Image 1 (cartoon, rainbow, N blue to C red):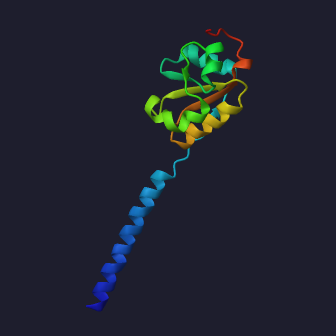
Image 2 (image 1 turned 180 degrees about the vertical axis):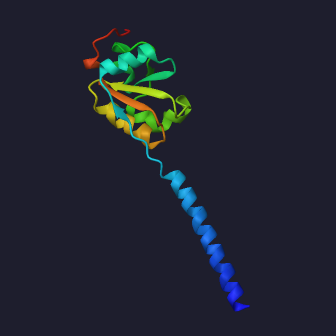
Length: 133
């Protein structure tokens, strides 16, 4: 009888350990953003159809000029607003700021939140193409 109880307990421990490993594996998926050039970003904008251009500067900077169709979420609000305003975590997101510093931080934040296709292309100061004012 005692051997049967030990056997049952060992089986339960094994099953619980296996289940815990399965959950851990799902949670351990790590995404990283990809650094691309402004030229590569422009090419994606011309060839892809389902993407978001994300400007992470301030409202004032955005008003001075931004890439056409860009969505504004300042870098300091990414953690608060991203899931509501960027609901598809598998969608291509092209991220920029003024010089590239904030866009790198925002891109990493998005990747840490589970966004799987984040591409950071630096700052608008390096954007050689048309902007909207």
